[in-house]
Length: 201
Image (cartoon, rainbow, N blue to C red; front, side):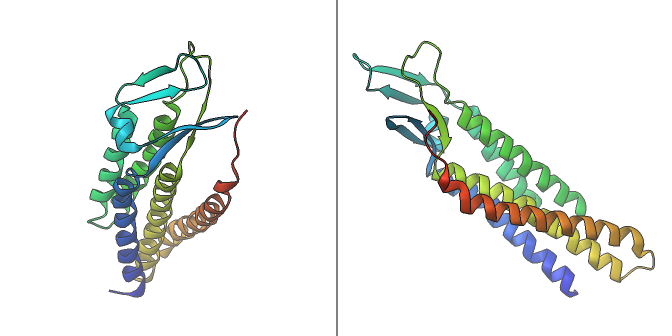
C-alpha cells in the first residue's frame, strides 16, 4: 500500500464520518422560521419529519399552522445512509455513487427547509432559513463531495504510478485534485461566512 492508497483510505474514513454525522445533526435545529420581528420558531430535523405546529403569536387569536411529515428530511437520511454504505469499499465507481448521494442530499436539504414556506392564507409571513443543524448538515454533505474528489484523485495518482499508460490516470488525477481544492476552499468560505446572513424582510 503506497502513500496515495493510504490517503484514499483516510478519505473513505472521513467520508463515512461525515455521512454518519448527518444523523447526529438532525437532532439540532434544522430550520428557523424568522421574520423582521425575530425568530418565530425552530424545529429539529426529527421534529420536522414527525410533523410540527407553527404558532403565529402576532395574530389575535393565535393561528396554528400544522405541517405534515416532511418527507424531504427522510430523503436527507436516505442519501446520508447511501453515502455511508459506499464508504466501505474503495474505487472510483463507489466514489461517484457517494458524490451523487451527497449532491442529492444537498438538494433534499434545501427542499426540506423550503418546505416551511408560510401558506398563502396566513397573514403573518416568515422566511425559513437553515438553523445551526441545517448549516452543519449542508457542510457535512459538501465535505463528502470534497472527500470523494480527493479519493478519486488519490486512486488516480496511485494508478498513474503503477502503470505504463499514465496519461489517462494523470488527467483524471489533475481534474479531481483541482476540483477538490476549489470546492474545499469554497466550503471553508461558506462555513466562515454563513453567520453573516441576516433577517429577510
